[in-house]
Image (cartoon, rainbow, N blue to C red; front, side):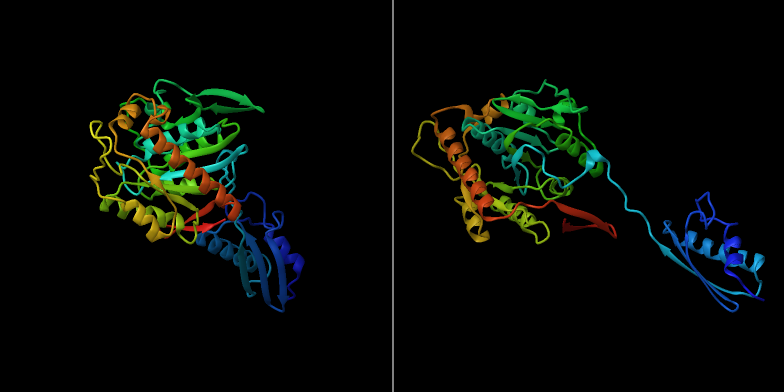
Length: 380
């Protein structure tokens, strides 16, 4: 029996790949046909990686050659899988800087209750008072507090058409632009979302917003080291991170983990430094006295041990809490000891950002892949 290439091609025209309407020859799935006497080798390429689909194709090719060409032919089928890469939606493209924003600073804490959001709000107002253009992204999806702290709890971001694309316009107060999930939920409504939903909401507030020109975008991260943190670092090239802690041992232990997260080999977001909040208490009637309720200089010692800058300490003062509760950050109170402390800490943050930009290359966003139920983090 003389097996010809034409006969093989005609036989292959009678079948198609699983899920394909056209036959093997029309779809150019057949890459090569070799004939050695009664031996036939067919090389195919498919975009379907399923083992079942590959096996079905192999059986179909062997059967059609046996039925239509030569029933005793020795048929070998080699199938190569060439699956196309999944394309991301344009609104969810990650890892790109936002045009017009010069520095993105993440404010983090190892645990809740250390005053991270209060520090973020006051850093933002202090920067604005210094003449910088500032924005705040409230990334604490499950406990947004920025609308309250900036006295804009009843405000809603407006929509603006920019180059044919609808963008959210951040709410603005005290010279600071602000976006928070709190603008889109009721004050007594719990946000019960899984990680992917929270990540999508964050991406919309990042990339679908008209931030305009900013010197600093501060990102108020939720406590801990988890999915939201990875999503933010995957979405944006973070200039640097500030870690907030109180002096007590349990807070310092968690703050150490926060620093370690940013310094992880495959993340490498520069740590601008550590801020010690609630460092001491000074009563109004004894302004010269300092009472170290949670311990003394714990965050300062931690910064030294971890070889990261210490950005300063903020006192435990009732006026800071009261100012945050009524939506007027304490940094707005000029010529007070609290405002002076906030200004010094803010200057230290600016100083470290300038030094970081002079000494280090731009930070790259990280790439997150999932393997066997766990996340692997790599640099893009």
